[in-house]
Structures are given as structure tokens and as C-alpha cells.
Image (cartoon, rainbow, N blue to C red; front, side):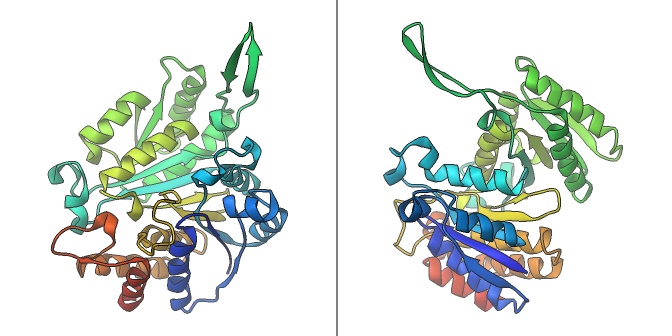
Amino acid sequence: MKICVLPGDGIGPEITAEAVRVLKALDLRIEMEEALLGGCAVDATGNPYPEATQNLARASDAVLLGAVGGPQWDNLPREQRPERGLLGIRKDLGLFANLRPAILYPELANASTLKPEVVAGLDILIVRELTGDIYFGQPRGIEVRNGERVGFNTMIYSESEIRRILRVAFEAAMKRNKKVCSVDKMNVLECTQLWRDVAIEVGKEYPEVELSHLLVDNAAMQLVRAPKQFDVMVTGNMFGDILSDEASMLTGSIGMLPSASLDANNKGMYEPSHGSAPDIAGQGVANPLATILSAAMMLRYTFADEAAAQRVEGAVKKVLAQGFRTGDIYEPGTKRVGTREMGDAVLAAL
């Protein structure tokens, strides 16, 4: 198993280091090699997704990513910004399906800003299409029209793009509680009218799965009002970007949530749902658990090693039950630890 490790920027190197330690402790046949992506790649090569990284990522079975970005690169030309590296590797590897679980661990119920009875037992999977929509649609740009600047982007989806991401959602639901909620804005966007039409067609292929539809504004409200009504939610790139971040905060800390981005053959890039957190970078206080759980998702989806995935997830649950907490999930009566100490605790639990 060959893994391309991309520590990235900000807290990325700190948190990926702990996930790498966990993977090594499993005593599996894994080869890991590091490369540059994001701001660090721009500094070293002028390119957020340099050729050497492209070659390694393509030759690897999976990619483990920390995080990219930071304010020091915000004023660069758009094509050189760290986020362009992230979009580039997703497109290059054909990673069209983003899986983001939102799971509330019982020990962290008080960390959520919602009442415990609203979020207790929460377990949602958001499936987001990742390589289409308004983020990639052409034409796009900023130009002068009638003497003033005008910005424009194109929301576009083909039937085949919609169909393949919906199948990912339905297949996931078959292994869960057999409910899919498809999110669109069909009342005003023709692009998402097509989305709903195709969702209904694909739903007929899965008669055991209950299919429902919500407009995105209502879906955002329902996620806060009664999140446990959902099992699998599936939506396009832009809506999914927003809703998955909203769902992550139901659990109390985005620092706890992993993600997987998969191609048609389950080759994937695995990363925490949070960003590079430049304000705490280098301080050794970042929460590595989302990255460690992302490594568990890698074992499950790309390497089909369910036993190893469950070992890692079980170790994380044990550490939380033992009261270990990084600053983002700390509460009085628990043991506050740093990044490395949390990694040590997971290794001990393994």
C-alpha cells in the first residue's frame, strides 16, 4: 500500500505526523512518501500543485492530506493560491465523491452548541459532488461591462456527473439506515431541477432506500432544527461545501471530523474537515483526531481493511472515554493535552 503524504500548511504537518505514527503502529505493509501541496509548494516551486507531487499522487494508492492555505498567500494571483492546489489534485485524480461523516461521540455531547437531546446519537453522512458545479464551470471571470466590473461564474452539471454521485450516496445508504435526502434549489435553478429529476430516476434503482428532497435553504435550517432526521445527504459541490461545514459544528468541533474524497475505483484523498488554522500553527495544540480518523477512512474505503479501520476508531473512542481533550474540545474535569500527547494516547489505546 503506497500512501502519498501531503502535510501542507499551518497545522497540517503537526496533525499528519500523528496520523502517520498511528498508521505505522498498525504493522501493515504500508509505504509512505511526503510531497508538497498548497502554500508550502508555492514557496518552494511557485506552483501550488507541482509536477513532483502530481507524479507521486498518481502513482500512490491513496493520499493523506493535512491542510492548505494561510493569510500570507491571500494576495497572490489566483492561480498560485494554495486552494488551487487542492482543487487541482481533486480534478487530476478524478476525486468526484466527498464523504464527510458528522458523528457526535457521547463524551462530547456538551461541546455542541445545540441542546444535548437534539444532537445525542447524531450520525450523518454528507455526500458532496466534488469536481463539477460552479467551482469548475466555464465561462468564469471578472470583466468590465458598461464601464463597471462584473464577476460571473457558471453553475453546470451533466446528467452523468449527477448520476454517479447519487449512486455513491445510495450505495452508502444501503449500508446504513437506507435513507437518502437529496438537496437542491430546483425552484430557481434549472441546473438543480435536472439534479432532482436524475435523483428520482436513480432512486428507482434502489427501492429499499427512502428518497426525500429538500431545497438547500430548508436543508440548512433542518440541520440545526432536527439533525437526527437525516441519514445520508447528497448534494452538489457548492451546497455540499456549506452544508458539510454546518453539520460538522453540530458535533461540537470540526477538529473531530474526517473526510474522504474518492474516485470511481475508491482511490482516495483523506483529510480532516477543518482548515490550516494558522493562528495556532506550530504551537503543538491542534487536535489530530480528525486526521487520525481520516486515516481510518483510508483503511476502510481504499484498502478495504475494515478490521484495521475499526481498531483506529476504537482507539479514538477509548481516548475520549479516558478524558483526554485538546483545547477545542476541552471542558472542566477532563485532561487537556497537546497534539503529540493526544497522538501518544491513541497509540497507547491501540
